[in-house]
Image (cartoon, rainbow over all chains, first blue to last red; front, side):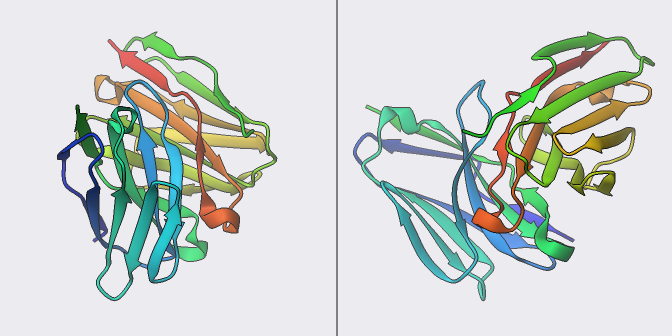
Length: 111
Length: 114
């Protein structure tokens, strides 16, 4: 069956670096995405990896290893506003239109 | 900016009622999605549509149907609401394969079925 595994909670200190891992088991893999969701808000798109390697966007980076069915989101220079839930999501199926989300990782950033 | 709007932020319905949730996007996106979000379960795909009048089942379509008569509008229908359909419902749209298929979400509708 299809599944995505990510830690339920991560706590880190302001200014630190944190890595949120995601392993997946799906069919017809097209790419791995990451979304951020603040309490009471809608998910917002952060990044997408279709090929192996690291993609960097400002303080956030995302990595994919297709052979390991594994990816991670790296957040640097953590700020209090980064406290949120982070979801990995896989595009799969015929045409890659179907998206499956993980259960989410709640990140707590402490002062 | 992409804008996805949903007809209601909060909705309270009774068991057995027919419920319509409306979603409209203004960026001419081909693909639209309906998810429900429950604590600890993340977002679960109910239905998606990759073109007008086209629909595909997601992982949890039971008890739901959808309608897409116009490109900008995607409706979710609960034929006979039940208490286990109490949830946050999120609509999203995307350009498709372009841009990595980034999905843009509406603010959500919190539905309570009594």
